[in-house]
Image 1 (cartoon, rainbow, N blue to C red):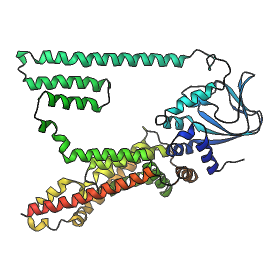
Image 2 (image 1 turned 90 degrees about the horizontal axis):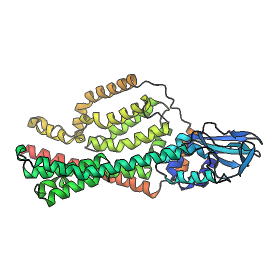
Image 3 (image 1 turned 135 degrees about the vertical axis):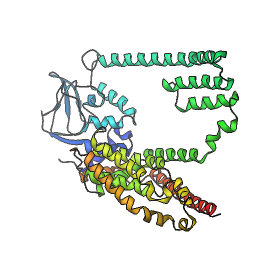
Image 4 (image 1 turned 120 degrees about the vertical axis):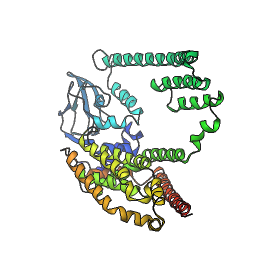
Length: 449
């Protein structure tokens, strides 16, 4: 019996433990799933074989053997859990007791979704332990992994202890040194260096969340009156702060909602299957955002989740030329083409204002693009040539369109989170475009007078 894509999707959605994962994470597993058909007494894997696949029984019964002794019969759940638990070898032999079918998931795919699903490791450990009758160590050997974990835990505790000692002692040392009359350091600078030294230790040893030392610095400066409050808090009233905050918030919404992954799958299915097509698509997305979003950092922040999901979907090496080519395409499209559109940078409006009055009025949004078109064509041609020459590689990028459709199917229709992310980004982009038009009109009016 050959399983259809719909059957595979249903088994993933109803498999124990995996059913708790998001549909986006289940979709990421599709390219790494294989189907195995076995006859009675066929071996699925042997003890001490490399543990590289987690198996899900679909029908039939599998026997787990230690030598010739039968340990457990499994007809549902999992076998080969070692592959998902960073254990190098299978501890038992798995044999089909009857004609049977199983799905396998590659270890690399499981490892990719484990950080977002911490319950996976605990659940698979419990599943592995339930196969064993005796209470001795389930690997049949010394628990070296547990010893390694204990050593790592002891090292982490020592690092935390050293960090807190330094966080208390270093500010005292800094305060005593800077207070010496020979240095002639003002009291306000002494206080600032003392506060900053404590925050620096907290950041270096990662003792608390990254934002807490910054809050400590601001609060301490205000309480000790090191600087006027309007100076200390000036950054929170700037438009740049709120722009950066909104961009990071939108990036988080896009990634967590799964909208970027859905967009990537649709793109991969629609465009020709080649690295050139995929990189060109990312470049064009960045180019499309350039006239709409007047911040190169903001455009990069929005394109980055698409690029990361595309590298993941194409199964490219993160340090290989294929993924570097996609990163170069995303960065180039989002940043290098800023000169092509008047609204892509605030400085462009200042440049227009510096032109002679008889020339200035001609440079509307369309005319700026028309004037820069020749330079833009040269820049785009240069990007294409450099990208083709520097990032040549033989990493395969041929994806099964059937698998891509299965991944889209398992996502189902857009959920509320995805719709909210879509509406949020549309409102945000249109609001930024409106703000840039108003700013352009204000600048032109100011330079006119």
